[in-house]
Figure 1 (spheres, rainbow, N blue to C red):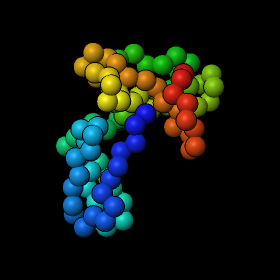
Figure 2 (spheres, rainbow, N blue to C red):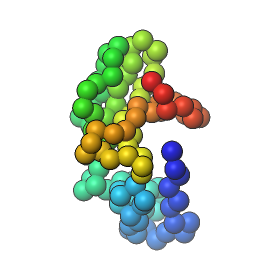
Figure 3 (cartoon, helix red, strand yellow):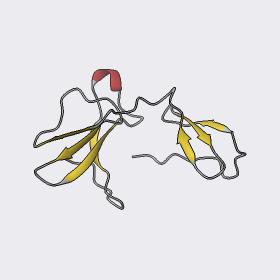
Figure 4 (cartoon, rainbow, N blue to C red):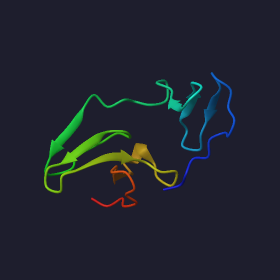
Length: 98
């Protein structure tokens, strides 16, 4: 997964379009994705098998391994073709398998 390099010294209200196609807004303390570019999940899917046809940002709690995953589409994948992967979102975890 490639890192996104945000501007180092942004001004409050400044926007930045990242390599992932998402536009972020600096609020003076942190960057936040703008709602125009990000489709927000309405909840978390819970079950023993991953949900079919996920969209980027969907969450899934796997009841078998007890791990929360997010559906992520990286720059080498095409979301419109259903490409992407479930990424373990525990802090410090570098794994992307499920």
